[in-house]
Every structure is written in C-alpha cells, then in structure tokens.
Amino acid sequence: MAVIQINVLGTSFALRAEEELPYLEKIRDYYKNVCDEIQKNDGIQDQKQTAVLAGILIADELFKEKQKAIEAKDSVQKERDKSDPLADMEADRLTKKMIEKIDQALK
Image (cartoon, rainbow, N blue to C red; front, side, top):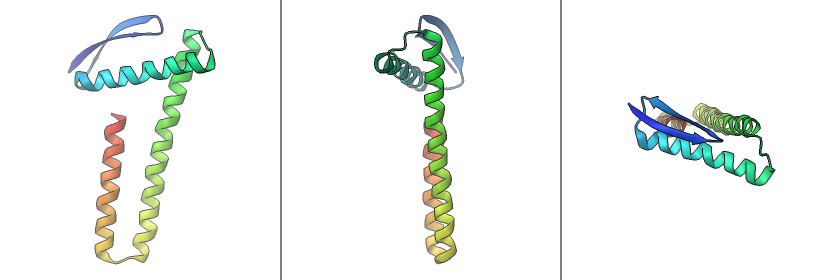
C-alpha cells in the first residue's frame, strides 16, 4: 500500500491505494500530461472541463484497447477453427499474453 500526493488542476490531496508508489506516480503523471495537453492544444482553461475531458479521453483509450483485445481474441478463434491443435495452443498462449499485458497496463 502506498500514499501519493496529487497536485493537479488546482487541487491537492493525498491518495492511498493498494498499488506500489512507482505505479501510482505513473498514473498521476499520465493524467497530468493529458490535462496539460488539453489545456495547451484545446485552449480550455476551466479546470472542471479539463478534468472531465481528460477522463473521457482516457476512457476512450481504455475502450479502444479492450476492443483490440476482443478483436484479437475473435481473430484467433476464427483461425483456431481452421487450424491444427498445435497452432491452437500457440494462439491461446499469445492471446493470454496480450490480455495480461493489457490488464497490467490498465492497472
């Protein structure tokens, strides 16, 4: 368990989470970068609007990655239907590895 100080968009607070501090710092820094890009590129200065838009953009990224994983799994399943048992085992291994990487990235 770690505690991290968050200072973003004029708000400051401490966050306690089960994850390790380096991971929490990556998440905080990523969010801050998204907010900075929104303010820089879109000219939005309202902090609430920036926070909401950042959340929407990050949710969009998450859904796109989940969709890619689903499509990859479906593609593997279609190939499995046409392939031999050894290829099926390799496809399963690769699919599981991809899903694990996505899950880790989302954590």
